[in-house]
Length: 261
Image 1: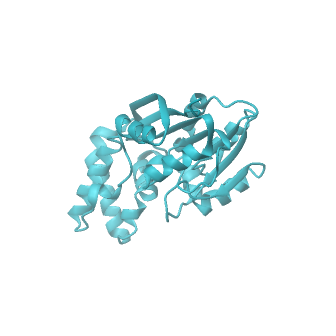
Image 2: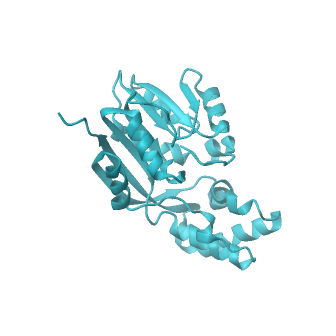
Image 3: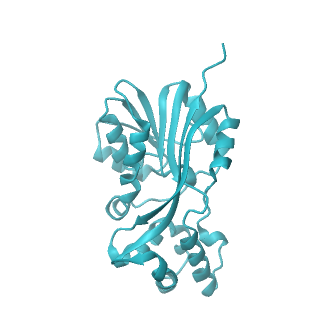
């Protein structure tokens, strides 16, 4: 589920405190509807929990992630799976897969044109691309609160330091169509997401997913920023003892059109 260039992932925290990332992906597997005998690429497989779910259908699955830490943990979790470290924008596969699946990965990747072209090349004619990722407006409240908190201690950052690819359906469909796909289904929806670890949920989320911002701070500054963000968002994102992140997601299905006869 990850493809962040240069990011060092703590896989223990990722699996132990942020399992919602892959648990929500089980719904995307239903949309994928893998079949026995199919060859499927799980793009940004993370610690491979969803890769294993896909393999249980009888499909032959390759899990790929750019993070060495994720692949190392995935191999420990599921030694029977084919798991490889690699760059999603330079896959090197040519018409090898019946489907490419991706959950919570696309928004981490900067070169979206290269990514779409690599996925298209990896698919067989008629193959499908099924993905979920952050959509336009994703985490707007969290990003804005972090931006204000950082500015208040003299460390201004653009967009709260959470610059990601969060397109509209139209933007992403146009990108895919420009690379030869036919988009057959797409949704853009709000998905308030309960964070794990109760009162500490938002702070833990920030330490994992906004670490590129917080790592430059002293421990005291980091704590001050987290408390500030929590104070700003408590009335809107904290309820019944838990934090809820203001996720907004895109799900999309696209087909690699067979060559015209």
